[in-house]
Image 1 (cartoon, rainbow, N blue to C red):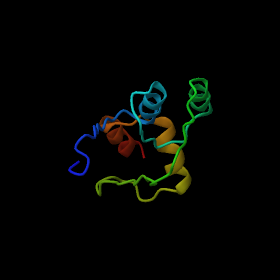
Image 2 (image 1 turned 135 degrees about the vertical axis):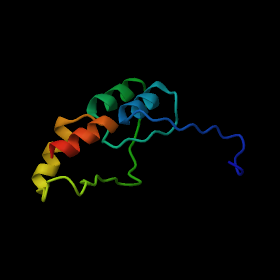
Image 3 (image 1 turned 120 degrees about the horizontal axis):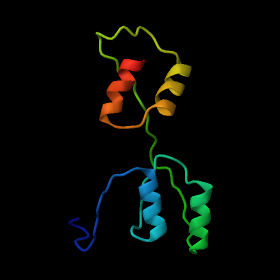
Image 4 (image 1 turned 180 degrees about the horizontal axis):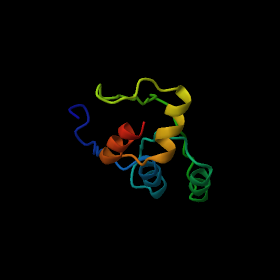
Length: 102
């Protein structure tokens, strides 16, 4: 910011869809997304004369952390991939539900 005092930088949350929608609506110049751009989003961009492109700058991951008092002794890769993302929404309360459900 010291090098570019005229820069206007705002960071918002809300998920990948919010960032991509903001790009499509022209309310931001750069957005982040933890998923690929959907075909429908690319089509919408094209219909608005925009050529949006994704540039991978980092990868994220998920760690399953279990309280020592939990009776879970092991988890297969398959169960970790199918149990959490497909069945539970994100958020603090669902994280507690996920831990109990495993």
